[in-house]
Structures are given as structure tokens and as C-alpha cells.
Length: 255
Image (cartoon, rainbow, N blue to C red):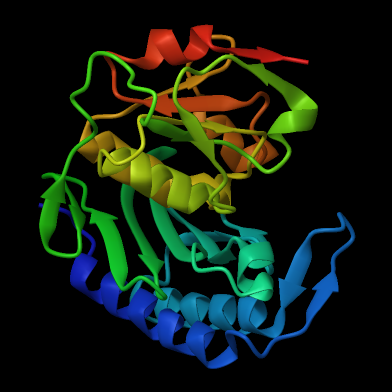
């Protein structure tokens, strides 16, 4: 059993979802130094999550998109993305998420991702399967690719990659959502650009529990502990069921 109370984490994320919904379709965005968007909802949600975590687990480290990082040398480090897909949130689209992941010794340990508009909570503990709400989920068992199958891609894919995927591509506007749809077997895979640790930590835990493979576009494994220092992926990554990962890698090339 996990040493972390997953039910409490799910309650915190549900609380964050309610707060996010109070701003949805009525929010103004500002530009950060890197030109990405931030809203008051992002700031308030991360502050709330930090308060809940620190009160229950004062010895843990925390990394968040909006309020920085601290004590990343701890055994447990929380990775917070208060609204993953802020662009979608601001635009009134439904595929934004609240994402809370936990690393133990630098490795994915636990994850909770909530899509409030859809009422879907994806989660995985340190042991056991991945879940969508209360139903266990696994990656697709397909061994071939149908023209109606799909994979998710980033919104910049047309500027950065050449794709010859024989199915369809979809842009979900959230890395956390990309992870969830691969984990539940709806998407056959996902091509993710150089995302940050807070985008990925919860999704990595859920993907692991659902049976997915995560690899760099070069075929190299993802060094998650290194992301505690550098935060950003050194190269794009691909998420897929193990029996399809080589096929997907073969369909993708950098421009």
C-alpha cells in the first residue's frame, strides 16, 4: 500500500476543480516571461494545493508551475500543475486539467488528474491499476492501426515534426490530458514536445499503472530524476502501448 493517502489527494484535486470552475468562461489571462499564459485561477489553485500538502506532509518537497520549487532533494517531491492547458481554459475549451503528481526518490509514485468539465478523474496509487473515476483502465491492446484510430499531438506539431501516422491526429491542448487518453486506451499514442516535469509527473504515474511505455523520440529512456533539476524534457517524447511504440516512433521525424 502507498504511504500517501490517495483519497486525500483526490479530495484536494476535486476542491481545486471547483475553484477552477468558478473562473471558467470568466477569466483574463496574462503573459509570463516565457510568453505562456497564466490566470488568477492558476495562482489560487497552486497556492491552495501547496497549503494542503504542507499541512499534511511538511517534510515533502514541492515543484509548481506558478510558484517555483523547493526541497527537491527530499524523498517525496510533489509536482503541481494547477491548470494544465491554460490556453484551452482561457479559450473556453473542455480539455484542461488539474494535475497533481508525486515522485519518490525521483520516480513517478502517484498521480491524480481531473478534467472538471468532463467529470473525469484519472488516478493511480503506488500499487494497483490506473483508474478513470472508479473504473480500472489500461492502454489499448491493438496491434495494428486503423484509419479511424488517433494519436494526440502538440499544437506546434506542424512547425516541428513530419508525421506519416496512418490514423488521425488530435490536439487536446493539455499534456496531462494526452497522458490520460493514452492510459485509458482511447488514444493509440501521443507525441509530446519538450514539456516540463509538472506537466508530466501525474501522467507518468498513471501511464505506468495502465501499462504504457514512455520514450524519447530518439528511443532513449526518460530520465525522470534529472527533471527535478532541469525541469524541461531534453527532447520530445512518445507515449504508447508497448506493442505499438516502435511503429509510432517510425512515423515521426523532426523537421
